[in-house]
Length: 165
Image (tube, rainbow, N blue to C red; front, side):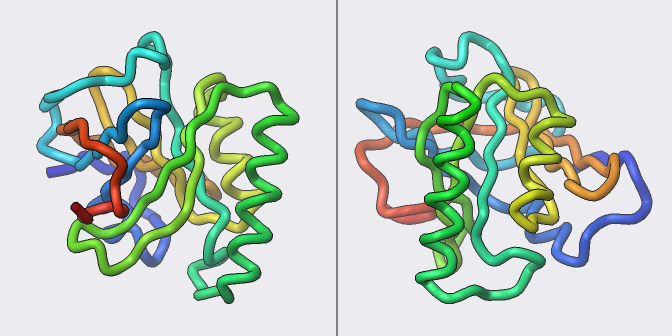
């Protein structure tokens, strides 16, 4: 399903490759799931104007479960950093397709892949997501590893989280 551009990947790489993301725009939530390379189905967000949308979290740094307070504090710091950089952003949530695991995130426009990886690395993350009109990519934060797949997106009313209804 995915092309991998490097042989050394983070421990939870397969989980990142299978993760789904909900991005909360002002009037709707867009749910994105990875698919076979070459697939691009559904609405790519108009506010992004075709630019790459990077999805970054600050939750559970270094793959270790953090307390709710620590995750909330880290998320606030990430949002402050995004605002400080003047990036267009929307709240997001990533997790597994079943909805049993989720992490508060932020979707941003205005970063290149290198800067998105660096921001993820600053917050102790293994990987960030990069969504373009033609691909869904998982980018390792500590090296150039990347997994490239297609995507399918669907619009929903306000979501209860990835996989939720």
